[in-house]
Structures are given as C-alpha cells and as structure tokens.
Length: 330
Ligand SMILES: O[C@H]1CN[C@@H](c2nc(-c3ccc(C(F)(F)F)cc3)no2)C1
Image (cartoon, rainbow, N blue to C red):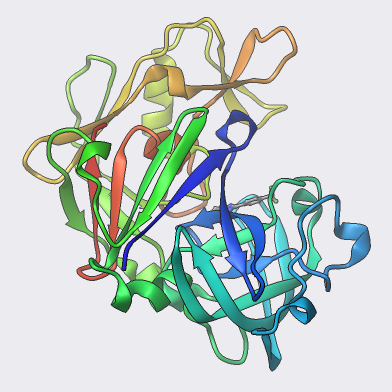
C-alpha cells in the first residue's frame, strides 16, 4: 500500500497539522505528526472539560470499532515542558488513505495548558521508534510500525514548507518532490529517535568547518537547535543579532540580511542549505522590527534538533526498513 497526506502549518509554522481519521464512522482530528515521539494521543470525550478549548474530541463510545485496553495508561512530556496523560483504546486509524485497524489510540484525560491553548491541535501522532512509547504496562506500536509491513516500501517522507501546505507520503518516494539525488545516512535509533550525524556545517559563504552535528530529525519541533559554537558563529554574522535574556533566545532584526546555514549529509559532499530567511523565524513585536531566531541553543538536550526550520529546507526520507534517513534539496 501507499498513502499521502497534506499537512498544514499553523501560524509561524510552529507546527504542522495533518487530518487523521479515527474510529467507525471516522472521526477526523488534526494531529501533529511527530518523528520526535512515539505516542498517538488525542483530545477526547474523557479529557478534563476545563482543559478543552475548542479542540475536536475523539469519542470512543461513538466508534463501533473502539476497544479499551483495560488498565493501560500513559503519561508523556515534551521538550517544551508540555504534557498529557490518559487511558488507551485500540481503533481503526487512517492517515493519507493508509489504514491500520487495531492502532493504539491514547485518549487524553489531562493535558497541560500549552495544549489547551492551541485549539487547532487535536493531539499528536508519534512517528519515532516504539522503544519510547509511554503506555504502561505494555508499550504500544506506532502507526508507522504497524503499517510498515504493508507499505510498498518501508518508509515515509516529509516534505514540509515555509508557510505553505506540505506532504507526508507513506510507502513511496515522489520523484517530483525533490531535485538531484537523495543522500542516505545511517540512523542510530537506540534513543528511540531518528538520530544521525552531519559531518560539518558552513555559515553563509564561509568554508565548511570540521565540527560534526549529532542530532535528531524532529518534525514536531519548530526550530533548529544547535551547539553553542554554531549558534554563536551564526548570530555573530548577523548585524544587530542579540541574545535576549527576557526571551531566553537569540533575536535578529527582521530586516537584517541573515546568512544561509548549510549542513553536510554523508561523505560525498551532499549538502542541505537552510535559507537565511527561514532563520528570521517570526516577528516578536507588533512593529515587526525584531524577529525570533530560527536557530537556537541545544544546551542541555545532549544532541541537536533538526526541527522544522531545518526540515522545511529539504525532502526527507525516513526509512524504517534499513534505519536510514535520506536528505535531498527541493
Ligand atoms: O519533545 C519533542 C518531541 N518532538 C517535539 C514536539 N513537541 C511537540 C509539541 C506540540 C504541541 C505543543 C503544544 F501544543 F504547544 F502544547 C507542545 C509540544 N510536538 O513534538 C519535541
């Protein structure tokens, strides 16, 4: 089988939401497909009502194919400190025309304020590796784990765009979606993430250094989080850039000329270039004078995060069959 789903950016591309049908008859929720986690959880009829704020709710009692996993629970927290928890059902789930009939659907009973205040986000669909699924007493498989054997090719692709709809494809590679060759590199999934290493990077027209970037491809993360050496070098090249202690982040003048950030993929010279404009991420003042930086520090995480600012500059193949990640320009 193969499938294809359009994914739609929220304001400032802070996340990309994809319609997902759950249950019989289908209840369509817009979910954040997240390669950085491995739980499929949804706002539901069981979610504490004071924590619901316009989100579409999955109601398992309205689905003839829903079955509760009695006594199973889950609890997850994300990089930004947000969190959610609840119970577990199985039901039929369809994304982009690909269906799995007994998918674990984690229904939220509680969600943190960050989720409550985002009416367009009805939950997350984790596309990481199964080892980091949080369901107790038995971890559940991700949607991709479950459909992979039936896919023509054991992979999915991410084609995110700046402030425009993009696409997740399942089981095939669309040759019209990228230019040149796709360069594949090994993924180390011991952490449960799509972890890989870039051998070097360059800022603007400077020469490539020899500093490797060890990071994860994370479609659920908005920004590009890098080591302090790379971040300082980058913003050192932007006139008027500064570290704003009140924001705890680097900002740039929205009218600054920001250099591109190029990272190497593989050892045959392939590169991906993040346009400097993507790094003038979003205005933080009404006048649109100061912009939040799309590159920020990865301090304390232990690895870099190739989030949407990096991913939307490429066509990315997540191959679960041979555990590789492929990058191509587009
Ligand atoms: O944990 C890492 C795994 N992937 C990254 C991720 N973060 C979120 C997220 C989405 C929406 C929200 C909220 F709506 F604002 F609450 C919060 C976090 N989704 O994937 C970070």
